Image (cartoon, rainbow, N blue to C red; front, side, top):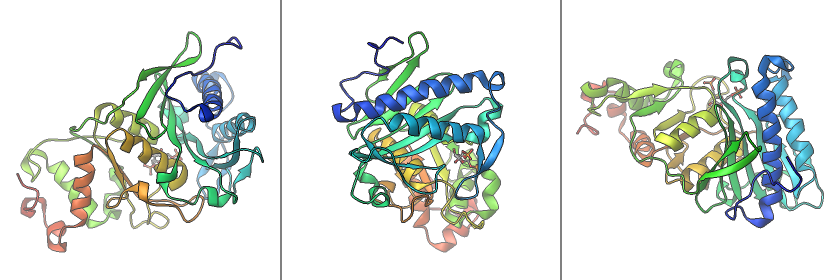
Length: 335
Ligand code: AFP
């Protein structure tokens, strides 16, 4: 790429944030190239350790973290909070922003050639490093992800709609393909890791049981199910053709608040979804009104088409006898 060709350019990116977004995009181009080489390059999926919460770390997790931190250090990013680092790292002591990142989400999919991604969230930096991140999600200046799939796409919001860019392999620049991404209002798809059925709460079991019952159940229509195991891929599908994603809290030890992290997974995804006309909750209340109490805190996440997500919240309001009933006896949502 020539020095004159910016990796991304759009009037819709706020000028003050442009260098940070450019840095994220420049690294993403390199990450996409590393991923595309797969086994022709270094062993990306090999285990190299564990992160703060005991999740296994793959070689690519660590490599991506180093690549993003090194490039963002040259920008106005003061504080850097990464899934791969226990504490906040100071990058540019004079910087104005605090950036949270999951450098490589979905890393269990590295070796099987399925879409993976980078998720990020940007706040204005406060005096304290942790304080810059432990604040309501609706204070985000930007939220977004890059998905490394058949196409490499950047989806980002600055609080004025959701934008979608695609990396053009011909000149290695991100080009705007949709300046007003909207979650389709209707869809017959739901996404949940159904192997956890026995650990779910009654309202979640009741909701899924009614989807599975299809035409014979109270919903009176057939559904389809998807589970990629890669949050960026699920988000991209839902932004494109609607549906609902659930990672609820469950009774497994350590999963009381689900699996996904508030600061660098749920908050930016919720921001993107709400800016695209969808809804994102913890099953009952909006994610955007909430804040983490620690850097790597988890929160249940339910997002997608508004009507579907609001319906899940309604199951949480059902009386005990209704959620415990077999779907055939659950009257409230019939019709
Ligand atoms: P990894 O990055 O460790 O692969 O985790 C991916 C993820 O955080 C998210 O992208 C998926 O939605 C979720 O985990 C899948 O979790 P289960 O393996 O429990 O279904």
